[in-house]
Each structure stands twice: as structure tokens, then as C-alpha cells.
Image (cartoon, chains in turn green, brown):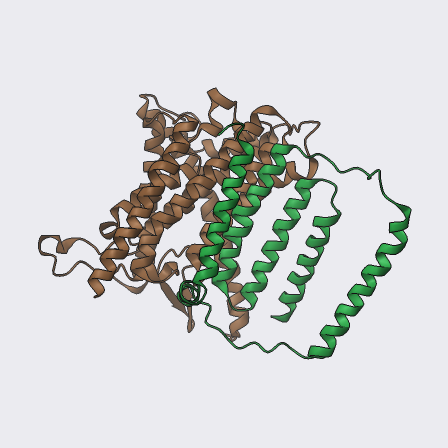
Length: 164
Length: 354
């Protein structure tokens, strides 16, 4: 079972790097779909099949379709080498990034230890249990999120229409 | 006779099941094309394929050979990777959902129980919907990567249609889920066993979910016809409107793959309709052990065949929707009806349980 986690972890990381480094926007979007699918498999390995399927249906199957359709309609084309890149950034950027990553790893190591596994108490991940959590304990974030989506839709309509 | 360990048995059993199901499915799809041409021909007072083999039965074989030997043309400016990825994705998604469809009861061989299903996920129904929603990509990417007007328009229209009707597809099914209380396909079918009792004159009817959720079935099946891009919802691939829609620029084998995956999608949604609303493999079962194993599979295939025949019948009978009528129907009629169905079902269940 562990080998599957490592395989899909590597797939997710490789696809995530591909999202950033691809020159064609459509390839980036497709790589993001691969990342989401790999994450869904990791959810499955953690014992949450419902969340895994919902991740694929909602995130990879609906939200990313929106992204892909928008990219196709905008005809974003290929990304060429950028014109205004300062030589200075090339010497300062990677060392700063390295310093940040090292700092982050040291903090995590001090807290959890190098071989410490995160303690996971087995939760009930059935649809009924998730539904109960969502509609009882987390009802406020749920409703606020739906209003947020409504605001986004209204904003898109207002921005896109020439006259109301 | 050597005794096999459980893991070895599992691997061999799964491989045999996959090979068998793929073979049967591919043959069924090939002969579905024959059936479609014959049925539509007879609806239109003509014969259909008649010359290749008796009553044209070897026509699918001839078509397959033709597809393999045709010249493979690709547009010059087509996006290399995505152009070749799109049919592969379509095929993968169309055939992946068969993995969770149960065909019958289990049977026992050498002490091991073998269920007639490749894998029994406890979220089996969601898996089918997940795979269906990933199938939208193949259409959109095929249309875009062909670098041509008609495919792009056809691909965009088709993917917009598919994501709109996906919602109604799921809503039609939620009523059944509320009644069954589980997402596992085998469990949903098992709850439809037996006949209605204490129903007076209706006691001879089987306990199918169709009688509990007629509106849900109508919503589901209408959305399913739209989801698989069949007439009356096939404007994105109508010949008079958009040449051939998103698969205009595909020739020979890649076109055959799109063609096959459309029929495989038809088979999948019909199988889900059979399992959820018509009792799946349940039917009169009698006789010796081997007959008891085969008969449920026969009942399942018969019910599936009825749905496929209905698909073809509708294709020969109805004209196609215009695109704005199609989208208006999906959003303004099917979606409210689906929500109404869930509301009424929830109230009835709460009332019955109080």
C-alpha cells in the first residue's frame, strides 16, 4: 500500500512542476487535472473514497472544465521568453527560495521529528458522516461559501455584459 | 490440484474478468452498430446492411477492416499531443466505468466466491459519475486541438451540453439514493428483490425502483440521452449543422475510437438505468446451479438490450433540438424537475419514517 502513496505522490509533484513550467496554457491545465486525480487517489489510500470521488467529480470534472474552456476560448497561445527579466533576479531568487525551504523543513523537523508519523485517528468518512459534519458543525462556512460563489457569478456577469 | 493463495487467485480472477468483459463489450458495440443501422433502416422502410454476410451480420467486421486500412490524415497545425490524446481519453473513460457494473450474482469455484463484477466499490455510483464528468475533456480537447472552425464550435457546444445535463443526470439518481441509503450498485439492486406485498392488485409487480421513482427515471434517462450526444440532443455532431462536429478532423482509427466510445457510453448509462430503476439482474431464477448463475446475467442483458433498442428507436423517430432549445430544456425544465423530485422524495421518506 505504501508504494502506491509514493508512486502517486511522485506523479502529483511531477504534474505540479509541469503546470508551472509548461509553455502552452492548455498543457498546464491538463497537468493540473493530473495533479487533482493523483490527490484523489491519495484520498482513497487514506480511506476516504467519497471525498476522492467528489474531488474528481467537482474539482477535476467541473471546475477544471471551466478553466480549460476559458483557456481554449481566449486562445492564449504559447508563452515565449519574457522581455523584461532582470539579471539581478536570477542571482537573488533561487538562493532566497532555498533559504525559505530549508527554514520550513527545519521547523517541521523540530516539531514532528524525522521519522515521526502524523497521528491519524480513524474518522468515519462515509457520505452520511460527512453530510452530518457539513450541515451541523460546518453549516456557517458552507453557507458563506455558497454566497461567495454567487458573488463571483454576479461579478462575472456584470463584467461581461456590455450593458445591464 | 495445487491450492492457490488468495492473492494469486484474486489476480488471475480479475484478469480473466477484465479480458472477458472487454471482449464481450467490444463485440456488443460492434453489433450495436449493426443493430442501429438495421433498426433505423426498417423504421425508414428500407433494409439496411444486407449483402455482407446473411442479413448484413458481417458488416461490423467489414467496417472494422475498413477503418484499420484507411489513410490516417491529421491537420498540419493540429496540436500534436492533445490531438492524439483526445480519442485515447474518450476510449479510456468510456470503458473504465464498466469496472463497477455488476452483471449478476456471485458463484463459487473451488471454495472461492467470485462476484460477477470486476470491482465492487462502495461508492460505485459516484465512480461512474466521476468517469462521465472526465469524459467531457475528450470532446473539448478534440474540438480545440483540431485547429479548425467546425470542430471547435462542435466541441464547445458539445462539452457545454454535457456539463449542463450532468447535473440533471445526478439529480435524477438522488431519489434512488435516498431510498436505498447506499452508493454501492450491488446493494441498490439487492434492495429491489422480490415482489410488492400488501399492494392488492399490484402484488404481481416486482419491487423495482421504477415504481417508486418514475419522475426520477424520466429525468435520468432524458439527461442520459443528452449526455451521450444522441438524437434528439446531437446538434454538436449533426451533419447539416457542423459537418461532423468535434470529430471532423479525425480519420480512420481515431474516428473509430470516438465512435466506439460513444456506443460504450450508451451501454454504460443503460446499464446504470437498469441497475437503479429496473432491478438489474433480478428476475425469475430456477433450475440447477449453473442455470441459477447464468439466468441473472441473461435478465440483465435483456433489460440492457431493451434500453439500447429504445435509444435507437428514438434516434429514428425524433428530430433534433436546436442548440438554444436544448440548453433551455436542460436548465429550465430538467433541473427544476430534478430538484422537485428530490424534495418530494425527501418529504415522503420523512413522513413514512415518522
